[in-house]
Every structure is written in C-alpha cells, then in structure tokens.
Image (cartoon, rainbow, N blue to C red; front, side, top):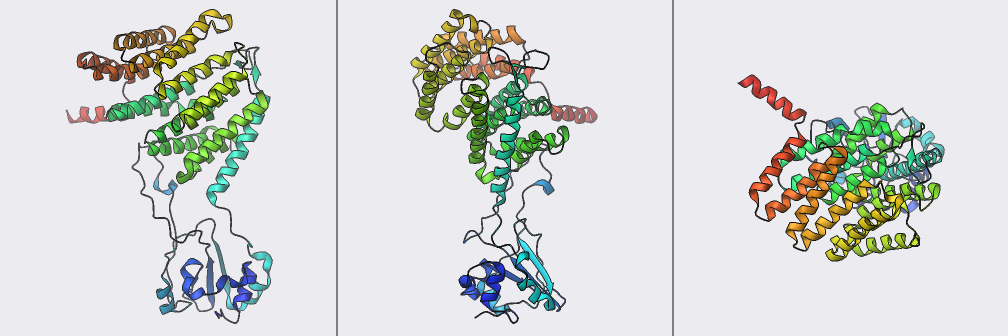
Length: 482
C-alpha cells in the first residue's frame, strides 16, 4: 500500500474525489497519474495532478511555415508546455519523492497545482472544498460551446433588428440596400488564390491572398449578417483544397483584426476571437457545427423561406456536402426547391443554380446546362427577377462549365467571355470576378493547346491582380542595388 506521509490511499483518494481503487498499482502507473516533485527546501512538497486522457501522448505537431509576415508570433502560437513524463522504472529507482528538483515547463490551463507546508497537510485533506472533484472539460470543448452561445446571442439580436423590404432585401437604417460586396470579393479572391496555387503560380497566389486580407478590416466593421458564413465557406474551401495552413493564417488574422476594431466583450468580437481559437485537430467539424448553429438561428428568427436564411443554408449545404456527398447535397436542394411549391420566389433561382453546380460535379453535365438555361429563361419571364444580374452571370458560368465538360470548346469559350463582358459592363474591369473567371478560361485555353492566347490572358490577369506590399518592398530593394 502506498503511503504519502501518514496518509493512506483511501485518504488521498477521498481528498481528490476519486475512487479508492484509483491508486491501486500506483507504482506501475505513476507517469499516467501523478508527478511528485520535491523542491530544494525540505519543508515543502508539491503535488501536481494531471489527468491523462489517452494512454499515449499525442506527438507534437509540426508548426506549418508562416504564410506571411502577419502570421502569429511564437508567443501566440499553440504550445505543448508539458512536464516530462518519466517511465515507471525511473520513478521506482528514484523513489516516490525525488531528492532532486526537476525543472518543469509552465502548466496547462487544466492542471491543478497544490503547494503546502508539511504541517498543513492535515488541513489540505480535511478541507474538501478546496479540491476539484472532477477533471475540467477539455479546452477545445469550452471554446466550441462558448462560440455557439455567442453566435446564438449575436444572430438572434441581429435578426430582430434587421430592416427588410417586401422582397426580403436587407436595408440600411436610411432605407438603402445593404450590399455584401466586401464578402463577395473576399470569397472570390480566396477562390482565385486556390486556382493559382494549383497552377504553381506562387507569387500570384500570394497577391490574391493579400487582396483578400486587405478587405478583412472593412468586412469586420460592416458586420453584414452573412459575414460569418462567408468566413466559414472560405476556411472550409481552403481546407478541402489542401491549404489548412492558409485557413490557420486567416483565422488568426481575423481574430487579431477583430480585437482592433470591435469593442471588448461585444459578441461579434467574441465570435471572431473564438473562431481563431478553435482546436486545429477538430477544426473542420467545429466549423460545420458553427455553421449549422448559424443557419438554424436564421431559420428560426427570419423563417425558412427568407432570402437571407435560404442564402446562408445554401452556402452551408454546398461546402459541407458539395465535396463529400453529392447525392445528399442533391436531395437537400431538391427538397428545398419542392418546399417553394412551384411558386416563383427570389430564392428559387439560387437553389436552382446550386443544384446545377451539383449536377456538374456529378458528371451530369447536360442536366446542369439544362438547369442553368432554365434559370436564364425565368430571369426573362418574371418581373421579380428583372434586375438579378448576379444570377444571370452565374447561369452563364454554369453553362460554360457544362459545355466545356461536354467537349463543346468553342461554345464554352464564347459563353465564358460573355460572362466576363457582363461583369465588366456591370461593375468594371477591377471587379474581383474578372480575374476569377479569366483564370478559368486561361486554364481551358492552355489545355486546348492555345498557349499564345493563354499567355495573353495570363498577362491581363497579372495586371489586374497588381502588386502587393511585398512586391513594393522588393522593388525598393532592387532600386537601392541599382
């Protein structure tokens, strides 16, 4: 039987709130239960209780290289400040209480340290109120729960204070339409970045991310109701395309920027902070649950058929099921479409377009083209769709993609160029969709062996993307050297 001073196993277990059998075979399991350390002064002793959740320690993760100069400094990055775990043989050889002080790294947040004089041992064990009777919940779980709570509070309040017109369009307090151009541009630049890195264009990839990052402060200040959904869609897309380190960079960047532009304790700032603190090992699942929490709140507060609620749910369905489960995504979209009862509504076109994208991903390209052409027909037929330029451009994009996949090269190119002209005519050459659509077409041209045309388009894309701060710094250095 193990004796610590004059106290038996049963006494120690009672004080720590664990079963009497917890210390049975203690000598064989010491590394997995307690560390007894003796400081250099013989009048004091220290006990560290560290619950071990798994039999083996998780190997330390390799820290990915920084994406840019804005990456978190070392003191803000995750660390595993753990006491060294000694083997059973080492503990037995040294005795239950080592005669030498063992340096210890800082303790983690869920560890409990008790330091006391030997004369105070009786008081320690008799005062049960000072001892935690159960292990603290994992930090990752606490972060997720806090995040969900803040999302619910924030969006419930936001929905109740929204101003909507008769068509469900968001309005500002002075009655103007509340646009979401910043989020759309952020999403587009990040999507463009993934296409560029797939082509091995690392400099252009960096520039696209720089353009996206430059929008974050304005996006956070605007607090558009779809901002969180935009961030989640981008983060999940980056993970799905093999760029989790970029997601980590952007999450940290959003977290630090929100601390700068939001009031302390504000739910929106809390959401951004907690989003940046989600555990990387369970990040994808946590973001899915976060998104589900958001969509459910919109549904309950605004109604299932609200344009905003439908838009957020469509984004959720696309990113959560659009890569992993095509058939489930199709089922959810057709169910949502059926709920409209064949009555033309403003959200109807968005559901149809998402369904067309789904059919393309399934290889059902003729059905996808037919669905997109039907949307174009509805845009012409009904007055409520008269000004829906975005849906018109998206339809052309889907038609061109379907034509490309069916080998209709000339038709695909013509349709894509028509979409690009429509974007330029509506919003100008600097709109974020222009380089995005051009990147798609450039890839097609190169695949068709039209290198000269592809290079010409590549030059136009590079001119549109422009230079970022790193390019300017390099130009400055080169100027000094010349």
